[in-house]
Image 1 (cartoon, rainbow over the protein chains, first blue to last red):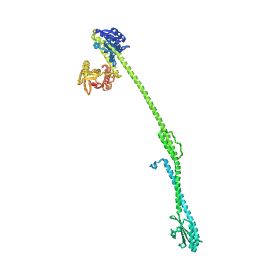
Image 2: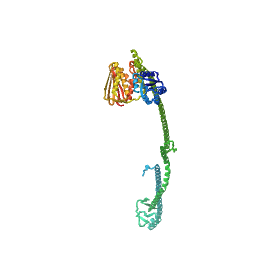
Image 3: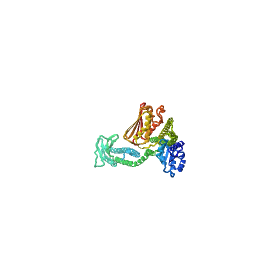
Image 4: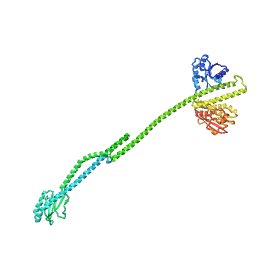
Length: 118
Length: 499
């Protein structure tokens, strides 16, 4: 199963990639929203883990852009974000996300949490 | 009909002057009449005496020689004087010697009496005249004369007087009318002016100066009064203007101040927004590295990358604990900031409260066991479902139970749950160090963990109770504490069954 991670922090990217790969997922890495959209169009992942606080183009905008791409209209998009201000979760769902995992993630439960949205 | 008192001053004056005029006219005429009458009577008497004297001279001879016929002839000449009605001659012995009667049908009976004084009586003039010759008295001559002419004259005079009064009354009224103006017109002018002043409130008018009489004095006083009124009015107008100016200015000041306050409010609001945005960013920035710290320690401890020895595991565990503590601090700071910015929204739904309490108890039990404390849970209520914010209630209870365990070294921590009057009461009772009275007041204020000496031992942000209090306020609940230093504390949390 091919999962795309859109995340700007290199350490977090490494950690998520490690976790997913150790559970036999194929990972596509994107460090910016723009790259994420381009790679999603070309690679057509089965699911996307999307960080919301991204530089330049934020996660909400990325989610909306992804939903506009033919073939990506129904795939799971899981927002992975720091639970910061009220309304973040609602905003993510409004923008097209189908799942929501709070940061910091717990390595013990992350995969189980993610699977509920797949 | 109006009484004299109610008549106009003009009418009064006319009446008074006219009355006075007529009174003096009548008095004058009556005086004239009386003197006229007296002088007529005097004249008549004088004439009668003159006639008597003449007749007496002619009567001397007949008396002297006793010629009675001769005497009668003398008296018969009295026909020429119509006013003489009767006449007679008494001889020296007081006997009637000769008599005369103008009207033979009404014969006057002559009586010789001692009364010989000339005078008027009952409309007649009586004349007694001695008949003397060479100093010797030969008798007395008597006339009875009609005074009707006098009466006639009196009636005529009275008539003339009445006519005169009737003629003169008109000029008197006209003169009175003229004269009254001297007094009434200044008074009327004053009255008119007073009326117009009271109507127009114009105190600038001044009366024209009059003479030095009472009216003049009145006018002067009235002018003085007007000046005083004008002064007062000006002062009052001035004060009024000042007042209006001040009130207008006040309004302006209030507007200015309001605008300033609004600007300040807007600034404060935008500052709040900036603060919120800053907090959101900070929270993210702090969590991002924490995310990988917690993540990597977790992965390492799962021994995915490779097996760990016991010391490595212990040290990694400590790193993980510190990271989690840091995370809870960040969460607390974010929570209190959001509450203070009014941005925390409650997520209200229905859930089972006993289940939640049991879950809290289960979660905290390992920590209690670690310190050899008994964690006792007793649920004394039939109510199952409540409507509130489940996660926030859980957060409050976890915080309170965690505190109780943290500050208790031996004994127990109890969670007691009951309901009354549509609200739930949860008591968290410990047998810990308790809280000193002086610390009670600050207990629910941010960053005020009790006893700085203990804070090293009991880690925490010092925000927990403050957050609990604020959350309960948002959930229409309350929190109270009872404590005895050294014996333990009881935290009582109340919140409505339905929110």
